[in-house]
Length: 360
View: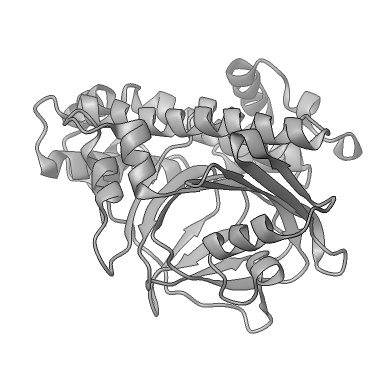
């Protein structure tokens, strides 16, 4: 694994989990993304499949059957190297799917949901809040993906060939982020994985891909192509921002400690950990931690914590399932008024202005 290590729970799937998400329906059980898109490309012209031959684009929108839940998957292939899946679904039952390794690198931008990746027989990584997961899954290395029931999964999975990532985004020089270059290089038979914070820019771009404003099919394809490239640029830039600052005299041990600190701030939204608690978890002195955190990640620990909490709050507000009071407590605010003030200061709108009409 590259980057920081995570404490992962054991992988346990509920006995009532049903098999399959979109792979089994579109490509058959155990189908790889390449096989799904190849089958789509060879399909006869139909309303569900859209092509832009001049730009080598192909797309298909698959609506979730009402018996299974609500929402849809939108699949787009850009050229021969990039495969995009925009996800906005909510299943009635837990779902389990086997993801065969096909030698692609995935950038998964999760906006909301409850997704668990089984990385081994007992090892798992659970994603419950906005984040970015980047991994290289070699051929022959399978993953298990478990989606919790009723949780609305909104995210974008951009899968691309390693060579495309190197040639189009990293170049052949030594200036590319070491963490991302290591993922691109890969290791035979070994999953390489890293995790990033979801920046406001990535949050906005991923949302635009999911909520594509164009109804005309060809325009949807062109829009997806443009925004996908912007989103990849934002993710690569995030690696560069972290790696560029990280080279300023910090040892590998210090960088691991700083990543531990950042992970704690990302995952423990309530109660909000104190500086002392974060420093103890990271194994650093408080003054050293605060200074190094700002130098490496480009923002203070306080600002980073607020940003993570506000991103989670925005998703909960937009879902409309919890009251504003409940949301404020879930992101570390004891008083609803303090939360509303912080929310307005961060986003420029009040929570009630972005809640669904039915939840107001």
